[in-house]
Each structure stands twice: as C-alpha cells, then as structure tokens.
Image 1 (spheres, rainbow, N blue to C red):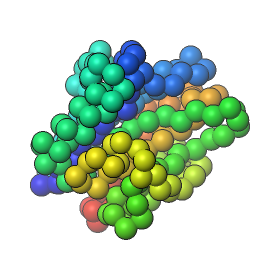
Image 2 (tube, rainbow, N blue to C red; image 1 turned 90 degrees about the vertical axis):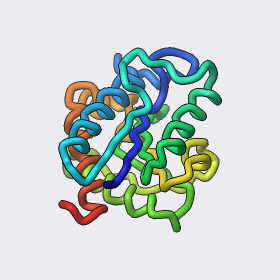
Image 3 (cartoon, helix red, strand yellow; image 1 turned 180 degrees about the horizontal axis):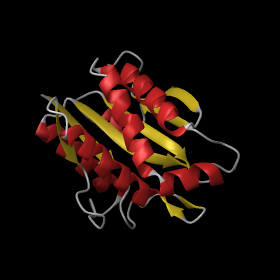
Length: 187
C-alpha cells in the first residue's frame, strides 16, 4: 500500500491564507482539488491517503510557521511514502499560465513524480506544462521525511487558468491522479 499525504496548501483565513485573484481564493481551490484527489486515490486499492485539511474551515496552526509545521508533522508521523502539496500560482504578469512543480532536489524520487503529475495536468486541463523547479528553501519540501512535490496547478492571476481552477477542480484532481498512476506504472 502506497501512503500519499495530500497537503491542501494554505488556511481558509489568515494566518497562512493563500493568494486571491479574479474572484478565486487559492485555499478554496486547493481544498477542493485535494478532496477530489483523495477520493480518486481511495477508490484504488494500491493507495492509502490522508489530507492536511479535512474540512473547508479547518485551520492549521496559529502562524505561517506553525501552519507549515502542522502539515509536515502530520505527514511525517503517519509515515507517508509521498507528500503532495497543492497550490495555485499568482503573478504580476497576467498572461502567465500553466502548471509547474517544485522539489527539494533533482535526485529525489519526487522529481520524476512531479514530471508525471505535470504531464497528467497538461493532458487533463490543456494548460501549459511549465516544468520542474528545484527549491530547497520551501519548508514542506525541506522538512518532510519522504519525497515531496509542491504543485502549482495554475495561475489565479490569469483569467483562463482561474476560471478552469474554480469551475473544474475535478480536471486538476484527475490530472494529478493520472500522473501518480503513471509514475507508479499503474496507468
């Protein structure tokens, strides 16, 4: 059984609330996609899954630091095999569009997992695959004891991305799920 911890990035309100643009709140999209992804994984006997936020109003921590630590500690104490943190991007360049993923370094199994997830997202949503990024400074990548991928699913500041994220979160869940299946050779 492959244990996957899904972190729906950000809290419903501060501390650690997410970005907001075009009338869409990042924390709401992250929550919804996470729940849908968990349902897909739970329907497959190869996976066990846990979520960082189990209700739309669940707050983790009392500061940005304790919110991030709560997510990492839950995954580490469960003994997850993989950690996937869901996010939405934002940019001052409103034409910026697509999905990208971050990992701690290139040599971890998280890197090819991220590549598969990005292909799955592109196939399910049609959004551009912006590729893999290395960022060892991100807390959830640095402090997890298992391979971790932070997925930026799309740009809230792009009207097309924002509309797709808010109106069709199932496409993002399906894309990530298909990427996971492909990574494990189960597709």
